Image 1 (cartoon, rainbow, N blue to C red):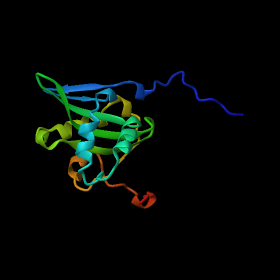
Image 2: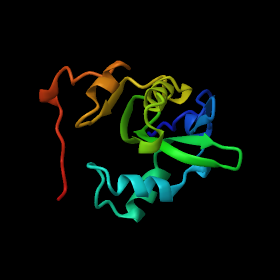
Image 3: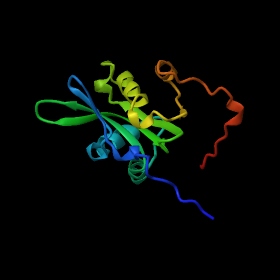
Length: 160
């Protein structure tokens, strides 16, 4: 006999959006604020996502927890960064597609983005938080990320 899942005490964290502000910058998890043109423009020239079709990007954004970084000027708000998280909101999260546009780097936005993300209420039950990076180990180490303790137990499958 199947026992249905109980939904009486669990609040779905994917339904709550959060906004954080620091000076002229805002981080938001509201997917309606994402500027796919900006995101695709950056990722299409990144070392990790070159060649990823725009349609694939849009699908991945729809099924992820996205932390968009925005700069507010007197006229408008423009997206200047992103961190995308693939998660079940309960036990596991994978961080990917992290960037701050070059003209906005050097203001501590990357550190603020990672700090905001790892401390977001929707991710507080995550036991294992994974990521892959070629060149930002020092940044992520500041927030508790380390090399896997047992890399021999991890496997991957890559499609060509």
